[in-house]
Image (cartoon, rainbow, N blue to C red; front, top):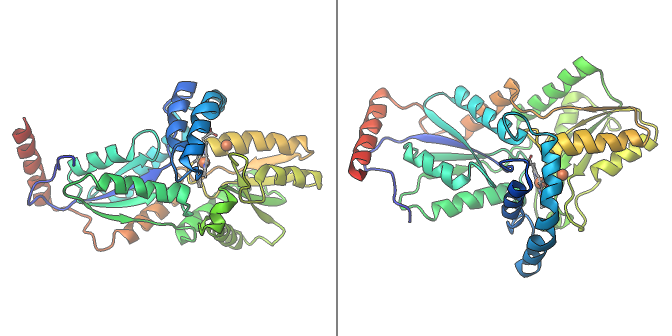
Length: 356
Ligand SMILES: C=CC1=C(C)c2cc3[nH]c(cc4nc(cc5[nH]c(cc1n2)c(C)c5CCC(=O)O)C(CCC(=O)O)=C4C)c(C)c3C=C
Ligand SMILES: [Fe+2]
Ligand SMILES: [Fe+2]
């Protein structure tokens, strides 16, 4: 048990914890090795018996993949850092601004930094007694949502006085999310014209997870169907694909790159590609979709490949996120009175004095 930072009688304080996957600290093989060891060592991500998987991971994979992945990350790295980290930070800042000072908003990463237990420690040290966990995964998958929830659960198991915790499970059909995606597509069409087909590429997962009851596949299709309807697309004007296959097993199909190659071979000249399941641009969208898959499409005879960026810090998306958070915060008072805030400061000063 870690010592609690609560004191009896402190005012109630509400926090929102935005959770994302995480990203390496630097685009270097050493940083990639640390990140991939944590990510691919998670039994929720690679569901192969440990005794068989760990020797492969620590043998061939962590010897070869870090250098290759570091080069890919280097191609998308920004002066402020990894795109996933930069956009997640901005989303947290935008949400904080919208929810106001009565709610503490922080972001945390499942792998790498800032780590979930560290941010939860900081939130409780700042007086949070209620935490809404809001994963930046609109579609639920055991390999993303469940493992983030597990990390919160593992932290809770170490607390003497636990905060009250709520988990947002999924929001593939949230009206604000769908409207934000539609606005992103329409704004792209206004600026660049419209393609013959809209490819909606979602991150893949092993096909076996669908058979095991993971709702991810259905939820991706639900998002795509609602978005297509909102855009008024006919059934031949859009397609759902799955990207980022890892390992040799079968993953959800159709795969993104072979689909785009086939579309080019069938004579399609101009395509629009977006990744609705990724609220923030990252390696998988900027390098895989906007570079690798683009090259494959053009090489197969396609002429115009338009990548539509993720929602990132689009105000309409941040408004939708704030609305989603507010619905899940219902019943939790958001605004602290100035008197409660002063009481909290006094308690903190006392606690620090007692610890000194
Ligand atoms: C919906 C989101 C995601 C699901 C589902 C998901 C499943 C999943 N991913 C891997 C393996 C890798 N994914 C990698 C990067 C990555 N994955 C997601 C999201 C989902 N993954 C994001 C947002 C990112 C980008 C992170 C960034 O830093 O920008 C990588 C690392 C990169 C590489 O070396 O290729 C791996 C590996 C598995 C095995 C899996 C489900 C079983
Ligand atoms: Fe992934
Ligand atoms: Fe990838």
